Image: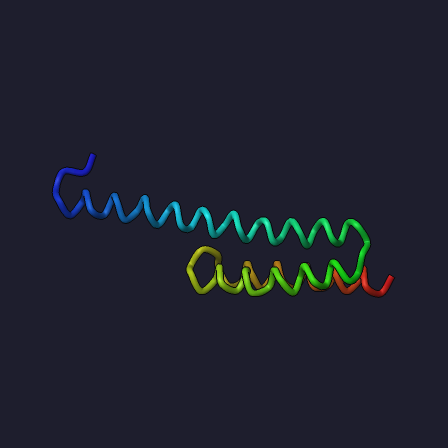
Length: 89
């Protein structure tokens, strides 16, 4: 339990930051799910559009400190290759 004024403020800040980061993570996951669904549907145009919409969200997750840059780079690379495979077929 926070006792000093400083520790009480830090606890409030931590909770607020947790809520914001949780919302950001949820938003990113939603964009990723849309890409996955577009790939599963086999529609190349929808898959490309969903990927194009998801990439800035992932990049924003890195700049805001929600995700690690290598994690995002890996996810973008794997998604891009899967979308490319759908487009070719």
